[in-house]
Image 1 (cartoon, one colour):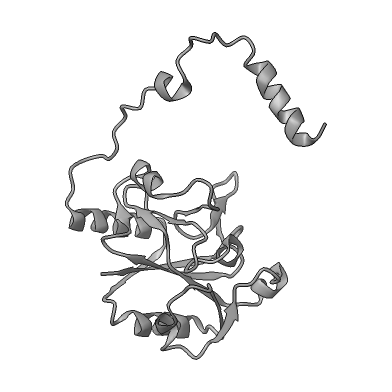
Image 2: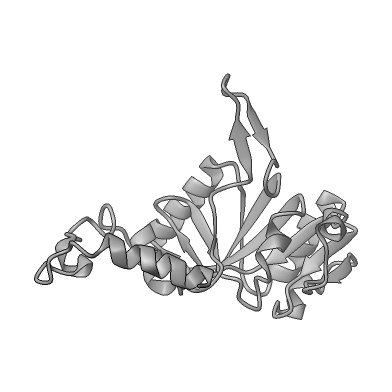
Length: 213
């Protein structure tokens, strides 16, 4: 008996006393909760996202599509970035204004190699305004999860308004649960028992979000 068969056997034994006429989980659980809080316009939703991102200590920037390469180049230069991780599907034009060395996202890369990289630039899958949360799903323009967890500086591009929704339930509708989802609400941070905040513990110390519209 392998591990899969052992686990499924435990599930079957746990469900053995469930009546056959009991409603399935999808019907038994009430899902009439609010899908979003308040009636906002698209512009107001984007403003709420920017406000909540800043509240989580992310650095928020806005630009047009044409201004994006120069803005990314400026942010990397101000950071003193000499090397940047690049997902395989990232638009090459986004990095046209930087001379930083490109480090490819590849399966053979090690955490030690990533730790020597200064920054990472990615797109995102969706952003939820009410919680100030950005979600990455490992798509070609986002790369593997680890490239956004090891480098100390993450620049994330969000297209507005098409990638912005009001709430987490709306974000979930756009996501594939089988993909490796990374939920980001501000830079990595934790607090000890005295509530002293420490940033960069299990992810980037600095998160810069560019709202492109």
